[in-house]
Amino acid sequence: MADAIDFTIEELGKRSIKSPIAMSTVRGDMIANYVTDDQFLRYNTEVKVGPQPPLKRSQIIECAGPREMIYFTPAHVHAGIVSCGGLCPGINDVIRSIVRCLWYRYGVKRISGIQYGYKGFLPEYQFGVTQLDPDKVDEIHKLGGTYLGSARGGGKEVGKIVDAIEQLNLNMLFTIGGDGTQHGTLDIADEIEKRHLKIALIGIPKTVDNDFSLIQKSFGFDTAVDKAVEVVAAAHMEARSAINGIGLVKVMGRESGFIAAHTALASHEVNFVLIPEVPFNLEGYNGFLTHLEKRIVSRHHAVIIVAEGAMQDQLITDKQLDAGGNLKYADVGTYLRDRITKYFAEKKIEINLKYIDPSYIIRSAPANPADSIYCERLGNAAVHAAMAGKTRLIIGLVNNEFVHLPIKTVISTRNHVDPEGNLWRDTLDATHQPALMVNQFGDGKAK
Ligand code: ATP
Ligand code: MG
Image 1 (cartoon, rainbow, N blue to C red):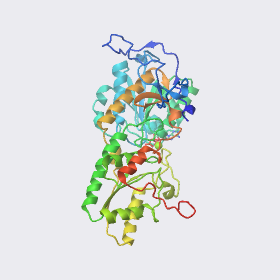
Image 2: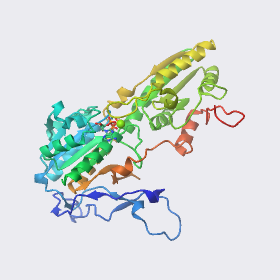
Image 3: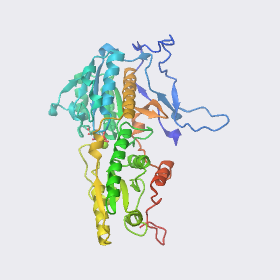
Image 4: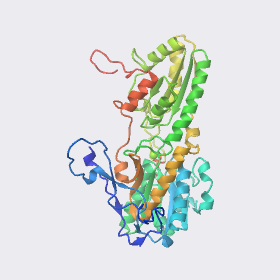
């Protein structure tokens, strides 16, 4: 599997300018801390005892960090930053870190913030660009949301976007956004190449769901779990204080149940975790409702976490897309609330169900310290990559190191909770929910 991965990073051209960054003053060896071009990280860290075959390019990833020789002359650089898609804790920390690294480390003084996502490039919206400097971004990490504003849509107007990039004379563009944004970044990079322009395109992966492939953890995820744990504590308290109380919490996770699983592991108050990767029946002898009833009869309260993407294969009837091209999901939270209420009403069992959907509270929260640190370092690594003339790459954390990953490789697949893996096994241990809530019938098939 690892053999097939393409980790090659593209560059705009020869690097012939000495970096203004002075490194290791302690050792007196000024180049000691530059990252060299032969510095790679093993992707698969499992090793076997005995002689090793030589590593292939598809098994090693380029390390991020400042290069001694850079591509762009700092005084000539005009950098752009754009944030697209939904909110996620930490976007402002990333913006701040990019601005400060460009300004203080490289002396780049022309930094433009594109407002409201890719739409900010389109003349018909007339959003204009905002000039960024360290003073302007000084306090923004304390705020949630995005200082630049964000939007869905506009990303497919590649010709117009590149026209605007040319008019602004940008040499580098930092795109903070998810899957859609990074597809858009590649389209922009293609158009830029067609026009023979030398502009570095650097993606900063934003997905609160933690579902970017290869990257061990996306920024904002840690804060999301923090916030979700607080909500679960409230749901648990409500449930314990009521007659047959049920706390139902919906968390983010369109295709991957990482937030749900981690929240259950952290809180230890969750009895059922329902995620997109693990199918389940609602009704039937081994269905979720049957197990919930058993729990209520024996313990008189229950807490359930459902990821927003659970059950979508059954709930979505007409496939509508939002402005970003994302499939509009049915609301599994209210659906479950109603089904649970109906089930117990028919059984004439009194329950008190409290449904909490904290998604927007979580998404718009400021980053916690762990995420702030992560975002600060992501932003710095993004600037070093751009100044070195690297392009079409995403900054990621792999095996606890910051690395350069080709955008096309990262967006080719998604990261999922492995139903056979140890994260899900530990989640089952923390909840005591049955391993599979699916009815098996005589023919061995689930119905
Ligand atoms: P989120 O995880 O919040 O959805 P996202 O980056 O995927 O983050 P979207 O709103 O889906 O956010 O997309 C952001 C931008 O990328 C939009 O401007 C959209 O037009 C553009 N975009 C989406 N999908 C594509 C695609 N396949 N190719 C090019 N551009 C795209
Ligand atoms: Mg999207």
